[in-house]
Length: 126
Image 1 (cartoon, rainbow, N blue to C red):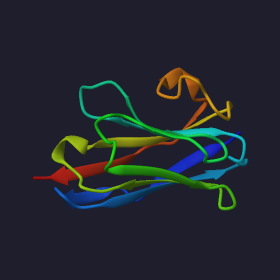
Image 2 (image 1 turned 60 degrees about the vertical axis):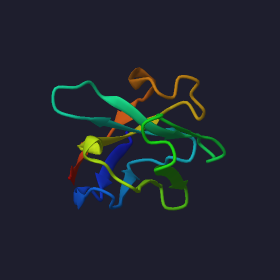
Image 3 (image 1 turned 90 degrees about the vertical axis):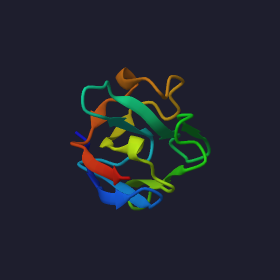
Image 4 (image 1 turned 135 degrees about the vertical axis):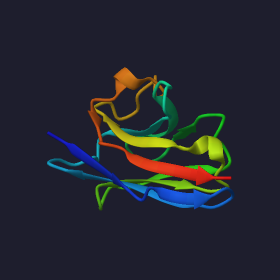
């Protein structure tokens, strides 16, 4: 059973940057499509970014395109989310997720993902 642990969240001023990490244990992520989602208070969990098993393809929500970058290091069993030019509306709990599909077609759909981390809080002050 793959377990995912996110880290790197925190409090940052608008315009600042953070890098989130998602480390896996209990298994490898080599063949898994990976995604990042976020959930703000009172809102549904929303897609942020996704990457295929080999890193060849990445996908982003329109709201973060050009500011966030998803990447992975399969040797380290870790996925990253570099977040630049942060805005107060980026404030949320960020979740890492792994799909048993290497290249899920519906990469922005919560049910596609089989494993989830516990989340890390990102707060952007204005």
